[in-house]
Image 1 (spheres, rainbow, N blue to C red):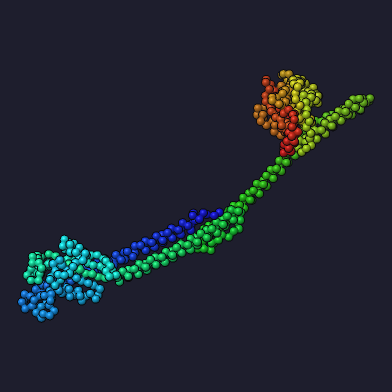
Image 2 (cartoon, rainbow, N blue to C red; image 1 turned 180 degrees about the vertical axis):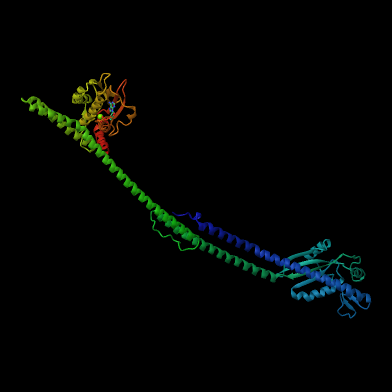
Length: 551
Ligand SMILES: Nc1ncnc2c1ncn2[C@@H]1O[C@H](COP(=O)(O)OP(=O)(O)OP(=O)(O)O)[C@@H](O)[C@H]1O
Ligand SMILES: [Mg+2]
């Protein structure tokens, strides 16, 4: 049994991890260089603003504490052209320009410019950034105006801050100095723009290196993570597959299997232990089941044995029952024959008749034994198409003596055109004889009404023969009505209780049906229904034999 790859654990674990790793690498590759470059620029802006603030502070300090006092003293003057003049000190703005020139070597350019330059700087043209910075700062003197750009192949950040008229001394000086191009300065006016230009190439290079390291690091971590996922998943899926194979072996009936992963201390090991327990339980249950089956089989064999014994007992009882009557007749006839012979003048004719009856009864007993054996043995009986009416007459003749002794009159109502039934002659004789004898017994003690044995035959629709044997006797005791067909059930002192049991098994072996019910006024009716013989009844004969064999 194979799991589709898309439903496998490996797919569900490794694919999301690999996708996450790829997404992380892409995000890092896109975002980190930008962020680092942005940071470098922001950092440069901050630094530049600090530098600008420092410069304005220095200049303010210089203006208030140096220039103002020196000029007020009258000995010195402040001038942009101070270098050759022993009585001149640099103007605050000049100091800024000079410092800027000194710092230029350190990749930081500081410049101070104005839309109102002194004559010595009149020819300077402001570039676009400087124009924009001026326009911006004149409206927002507290803010910073900045931009990064590439200048001469180098990345620079330009930061501009306002240089305002911070102290009255500056205002006064500018309004009075002859060189000043504007004479109406007021406190807080934007005098100039202080711009710091710093090169950020080293920071950018550093940032790029950092980005590369981070990306490489992320890729490595991703690869390691994916590798761990692959190994971890394999360490789970492989033993699970082995366990599945082992369970399939178990399903195929192999309980001897040693589960893979039994030595492991992790969950797989526990699973293997649990499976092992389960399989031992299964094996034990299977063993119990086999034992149970054996026990059941033993019980069935025992039952069959008892059934065989019962059948044998039944057969023995049947034989005893059926040959008892001819044997006692033989004894009676022998005694009679002996008496006829013992006379002073032996009556040979009578003795001969007795001997003939003895021979007849002897044959009959032999026939009975043969047919009873046939009931219980396979293939030892023969069924032929028989006319039931003729059979009834035959048996009535057989029991004539008993009918006469019991003073029973016979009434027949036999349908002339009965179809034949496929039957064993002796067995059917047995059936009718038993029914007639029972009827005679039932009427033998009765004195208050006529003793009548009524035998009727007719066609049983659609294709059968019905024989009803009715007596005017005592009737069946309602308490015993469910048991009269049981073997050995009898209410008679001389009875064996086998007659009806034998009748029913014979009738059923002929695919017929035997039932008992109370007669109209007194007595009882026993009804037999046989299927009529027709084409194909040979098959039924074979089936009938099979049934007897089972019984
Ligand atoms: N025609 C009948 N009328 C009333 N009861 C009957 C009749 N036929 C059978 N029985 C009852 O059914 C019982 C069983 O009958 P069955 O023929 O099997 O045995 P039995 O006649 O008692 O003994 P035997 O084995 O000698 O035939 C009888 O003892 C009797 O009580
Ligand atoms: Mg009987």
